[in-house]
Length: 613
Image: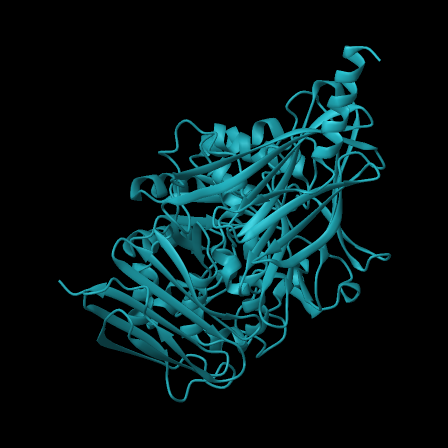
């Protein structure tokens, strides 16, 4: 044997030995571990937390059926922070360890990146030039350990679950998994925006393993083409998942050089108001109504008016509306879809809307189309338009970091959509499942619940008395269900009738410095606190069982006294029988105090806490 042959064999043996045992990368705190192992030419991964298996050995593929071989690997640690343009946090720490593993798939080079956070794991493949033109099939099984229950979004119907996997007819992203002791994980993806050619991943029930498998496909464009990140979020409770920043950290950084024009905010949505009567005035899609709404928005210190379907067919009669909005400093979000709007070619649409003076576009009826979603976000940004997607949009988690003009999503059943009202239980489920994907445009905040239930709204629920909520719950829902654009759906008169309660919504910001989950039990109750500056806003939502939650104020700064304004269901409030009864009180509170949040059937509780100067 020559020296060269001996060296070559030695290298091969070294590589084989490299993967004779699993390669493991741990989170910075040492609690979460992800391991890679090659078995008979197939790559497997597993995940544990605190030494306890979370995901057992699960197949990971980049080309269907390809024989994998392993090269070298490296592990690095990152500990940086970044500032979102808007969102639930003003500063986000990105602390992870990353494994880079060199592989070949049927001889074609590819790299696997595995990032491990204290709160989750992400996998992504990076393709090589040799792969150009090759069919890519990114597939990952998820062999969850233990007896668990599953939850999945159900389009515009709410959330499926708790259920076994085979009981969910169509699994959608995210798939949320809960253990009997409350430990939870969520399966979703991040940075689909950057993974050109890929559509949103599909999750199926593998009949052989009885576990979920997620997959997505594309044709490789060659060197540097990336797959989306396949993500597992981990939490001791399901509420922990709501403040998990792994999805945002895995998304590509902001790609816009100038973000000064991107302004989250609050406003009024005209759609559900149409047909509402006040004295001798009837709201409609006309100049008089829209001028009135612009004035109301300006008077209340809001920034936005959303004009929904049908406006483009009356554009000539609404020119004064555009001028008046500009004079008042009010931004317009204008609706478009190919079915209910004057048709405009795609390559002209966004420029046309910007030319009218719009500051945003609400795009409907695109369904789950990742390619168009990327295009629309990019074109909107080039024309300095915020964009909101409706009607079962593509779940492009994390894209609001990369393209912060993506301001909100109807990735849920929006209240009264299809003229159906969702239940309190469904709201809580959507706030804990759908919200893991994107900020939700959910149309919370109705104050005229009695008139809605009496059938006095031409676009309200078809079934009378089906809108089950209290006005305090409606206030709390606007905080709990986060959106970069908070668009209130009721008539101005309904808010002015309850002007003291309306003060909460007027004071509430649309972007935050910090967010905490105080309590959360899916389908039962959820309580969230958000901070802007030194002011804290708290919203708590209840299902159809009256209860009192003890909310401990451990998030307040020690040594400071806060004035608490408490918005509560009245003692006789009831989500069906007496939904509009509420009381407001004030008190002083400090760090560690406990506030009893007494909530009616389908009720809620809200607080504003301000330091005493």
